[in-house]
Image (cartoon, rainbow, N blue to C red; front, side, top):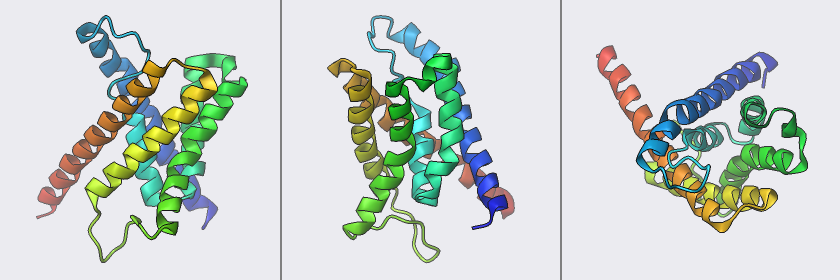
Length: 183
């Protein structure tokens, strides 16, 4: 693959990841705090960046690990500052950028290939199911690295699944809009 194309993909995917993070924590989390003030976890119940991770891994395979890395690092740096270099955060970054692609790769190895193909429509429920598996693995590994309480595992899973679902829904409407404009 040409460096120029990989640079474009990296810019696009990382920008999408950062934008999803900004929407999640700039808009959705303040609303969550209003409607669920007693919610004890810092996890978002609608974590859109998970959708970016899953969809980029589905579309790009292992390249998604490279394309996600700058955006994931920037988000972690925004949250933790220089603390981004702590071992637990570095592990969390590694989990965020590798688990989605690794999961789709394992699915291909066990003959459940969800890769986009020109002659086949995407199986959106299958991609959603893969997103749930990715969330479970990511949540377990990330929360273990952070030493988080068990309630955080469930909150992360809920946020990831709803984030993926709503991002897919948003994209469906966007693509439908563009298709209708072409006719």
